[in-house]
Amino acid sequence: MSHALEDLRPARLWRQMPLDQKQSAAAAFWEDEQAALEQAEAVSLIARQIKFRPKSVLALPVDKQARLLASIAQVSDLLAARLLVSYHLAHQRPMMGAFLDALGIAHEDGLIKDESPTAPDAATLDKGVAALKAAYPAGDVARYFWTLLWQDPETWGGLEGRPEMQLP
Picture 1 (cartoon, rainbow, N blue to C red):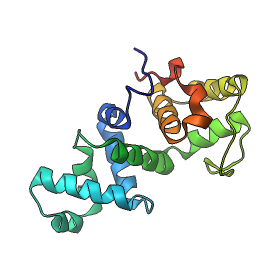
Picture 2: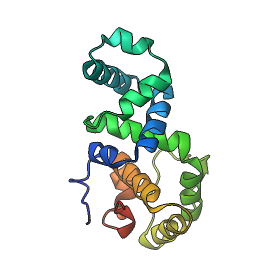
Picture 3: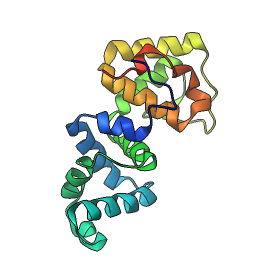
Picture 4: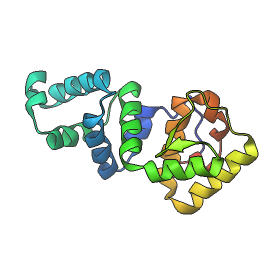
């Protein structure tokens, strides 16, 4: 089953993630200093789910907040996208670096140095995709590629429609 950018939204990918990865993503999310807006949304969601005041949710230990957030299936695309980014930054740096190395893109621990990278040509992208496909689980590769595509469709548009984008 192939997915187009329009029909596989971040919230849907979040719902399909294994629970242990959701919990890892949620734990990383609470540590993400760039996620204040999405954290406020998450606190509100958790508060509604468990019938607590937002202030009480904030007083919970981070691991409890992470478990509660991971258990919520219906989140906004904005929140899901931030959860996916937080997850990759905290847990998938080796894969991110391997992909950028295979593409010949300068990076620091998996983060592209250039503020506005140019889109890799098809042959270069093929090489990078093949490198990840050979070294990492298909689900992890697909989640990473979707996250890249949502973050920067201009640079990573060449990923769309590839078989490696399919979730197992």
